[in-house]
Image (tube, rainbow, N blue to C red):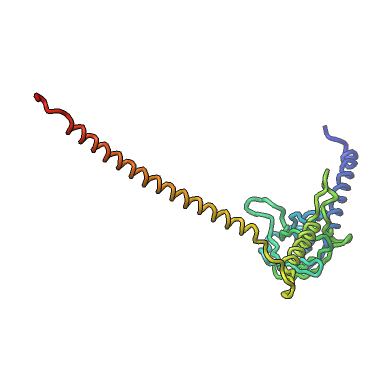
Amino acid sequence: MRLPRSRRLGAAVPIAAAALALLVGSTQAHVLKDFGPYSVALGWVHEPTYVGQLNAVQVVIKDAKGKPIVDVGDGDLKVVVSVGGQDSASLDLVATYDEDTGLGTPGDYEAPLVPTVPGDYTFHLSGKIHDTAVDETATSSDATFNSAVDETDIQFPAKLPSLTEITTRLDRLDARISAAASASPPPANVASAPPDTSAIDAANAAAGAAQTSASQAHDAASTALLVGVVVGGLGVILGAAALFTATRRRPASGT
């Protein structure tokens, strides 16, 4: 059953309003700029933008009729990201849309980036779209795209130390280690305490006593062996003499 035209129009109005609100919210997070026949939106892929989380600089390109431009070559557009007086390398913007598979978003070009400090980030976009030169610089703000913030506000139940806090603690630890390693030795004219030799002397005395005992035991064993040999030899001689005497005293048979 089809709804009357008036009811269909009434249902379409809230849907259109919601889509318009979504579109406005999206464009508020990007800087919109026209270059010749092309419209360019510049901003972050993910917002809010959290420190330490993988993100990307995003450029969305359309023609005057709103049709996505999908044939900008990889590297034809580049972006340099700046924060706190430091500049990144020149990053290539690469298409996320694959015409062969239909995957990705037509007209979307991205350069992956992980923001590592909170603050206002500046994007300097340069290059060309076909034969049209592109050069635009924009800084994050309430009117452009989000600044990077620490993610502690969305952590639950326990809040982890931020990347900035971890870096600060490591820097302090490195400074302490360097200071300890570079501490100067005591002056040369300060007499050092004589080493404690009592333990060494005791060890030497014990070693000497052990050696003496071993030598005495060896001498005693040698003496006992010599006495045993002499006694054994005398026993053999005496036995032989007794046998000889007994043999001579035995009377001859038949006498």
